[in-house]
Amino acid sequence: MTLQVVVLGDSTAFTDDRGPQLPGTPSLYPSVVTRRLREALGSEVATQVVARPGWTVRDAARAVTKDQHLQFEVLAEADAVVVGVGSFDHAPAGVPPSLEALVPYLRPASRRRRARQVLRAAYPQLVRLTGGHHTRTPAAEFDRLLRLLLEQVRGLTQGRAAGVVLGPTSHASAYYGHRHPGLADAERRQLRVARQHGYLDVPAWTHVRPAVHRLNADGIHWPADVHTRIGDAVADALLPQLRGDSPTVGMPGTAGLG
Image (tube, rainbow, N blue to C red):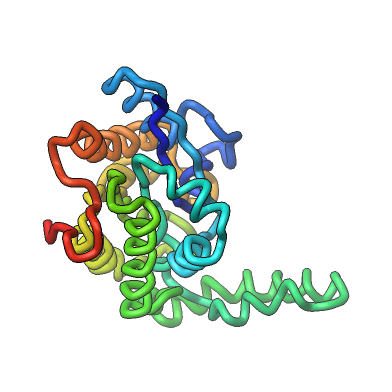
């Protein structure tokens, strides 16, 4: 029997310090999780990574509530689910997301390119102006959407899947004004919501911080050794659930408060 693992993530699930990588690249954290589970359980493990650059909790919640393929052909068959979104929600906001969303609809292409250039130049200046205290997704809205996402995953897997929520990462990026004052509070809230819904929580930034000088040129994505540490931590959280030594995400009304 093949163990089915699903990773719902952003670009950190498929990008390292060299840039975006092909699916199944051994150094990425989903591959590390796959390898660790296979070795520990002695069974075949198939991992599907559902991830996009800049994916937010709103994007992930919409996908798991609207995409029938993801709902019933991917998540419904999952034995373990790793939720790895949130980092971009908590990142310092410069240009409002609603304004950025309009850019792809601008015509002609020259106007669209010019708009992107202007917004990209303005973003770090606006972050510095606000001190980095504004985030892409407001705290209350993030919590609401994360609850929706976790409850939907629990329902689709009928409460039998092992579940882990990966905490947010930060950055060393000029684009974000080298600021991230709200990270610690955002991480606490995100991982608290995870525990309240019966998911085990795995902080990410604690593994990334020592390697902050070795991130990708964008100041965001991790080198291979960080992927390995995070993959190991996720696997360590999943294994007791998969072995039956600790509860899975449970059904509504039965999730542990951790």
